[in-house]
Length: 260
Image (cartoon, rainbow, N blue to C red):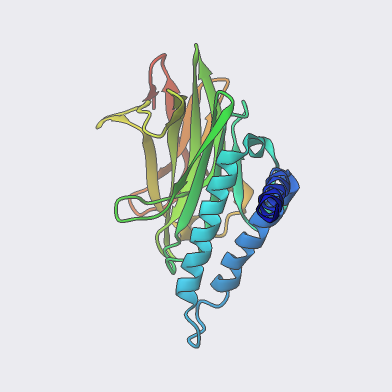
């Protein structure tokens, strides 16, 4: 009887815990608590009396894994606003069709060369799948700021606009193509036709000083125009200065091709 009561108690705790975790508000509260630890250790990174660097890494690892777990286990997170996390500077880009999301954040690492991490979340059938992307020697993880949805025929593509920071002077921007195929996210869709062949992404580097004093909303940036099915990319001079001129890649039925 005592053993039966023990199993009953454990079972009840599991049910209560699981139902609590399924609440979007509870998920957001747990993620917010975890995300705040990144900022906490980032603010103490120069304190030589503690090992804030390891603690910062641990905080990022914990948050990234927790975000991946929640977004994969609970499909409702795909459309949940997570407003309090956005206020803490977790950037969330969502596709127009509600099937794909990119979560991006600054890890606080890298010094003047900032490091970012992403969680890619997509819906396949009644399930959601998520993938955590972290920096490594083979992978530079950017910060995604915008996500366009492009439909042609029976195909849907997602164009993610990203940025990266290499130093206090040099930065970069680019656009990458995604698609949900064969019940998973395809992050290597080669839809961009360039002089050097078919590419999955196009990016450029620039001198941040050339736009530093330009209001953010007036800075030249990569955009996608649905009406003309065109990607517009700012022209950068050999010295790294961003200009108001644009390069156009237009969809010609199979690929985006440069037309000017």
